[in-house]
Image (cartoon, rainbow, N blue to C red; front, top):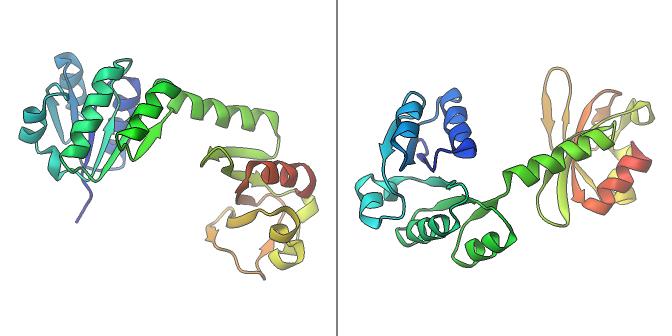
Length: 218
């Protein structure tokens, strides 16, 4: 059975989510209290509903309990964001991901049971900064305060060597979880997998270890 998604709040972030789901041919319920936004995004959503997400009866009527994954993106209205998240968890929604405005907002969301708190502007800023500062790093995804995943371009230094020969895990405490070539992505590469210049290495580890690997190992 296909997962069902819903986006509550059709501002910049929520609206883009709906469009992306549409491009991926994924069914999505779009909800906003602004009728103009609802009318616009109805062309991208499977269902678009004009409703206030902080009303429990309304959430029940639109069938939110049947949705597997709900994204809450209510702009600067922190109170509505918190109340909506609380209602969704009380109604038994399995996954509730919420856009946070600041650290205080996140603290409350964590306490009331949000499954994931999103900081799109901050996260994108970090990805761009890491990409611009390093010529080797082409993408950066923060997993926590200590751990991240980076995509690093293999240089001549790594060319034509196997994973075993490089011993990146023992030398840098980082783990290569994938290698992307022109043709494919190899997940969980074996010790005998050969790395060539220009390959994109998908590496996970502590931020300090990833930095050391990027500076010394690649």
